[in-house]
Length: 124
Image (cartoon, rainbow, N blue to C red; front, side):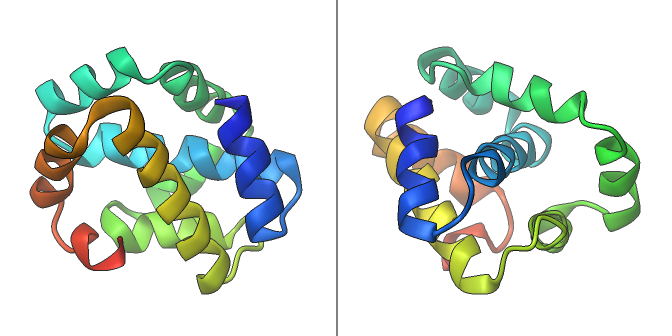
């Protein structure tokens, strides 16, 4: 997971702390919005995924902010925007996270998750 965070920080031009929070938010989004069995299987082969989500749950105000922003892709975009990210940075980060996830879990599993979350496929 640390290699992913370092790569995101470099490619998106963001601080490593922002990259780490972004990854945690995206993984939390998948956990909340995706099909439970497929996401659980994904997390089982993705070292550090559960810890990244758990770290976000412990952030001051993140839970309340997430509730206020709502769910779905718009809620995720709002949470990422709150980190100071623009659309280009969000796209770079999202593509890298999903490339990493595909590498670890395979195209089929990722495809099942992406197809189960309305609108997600158009951003990848």
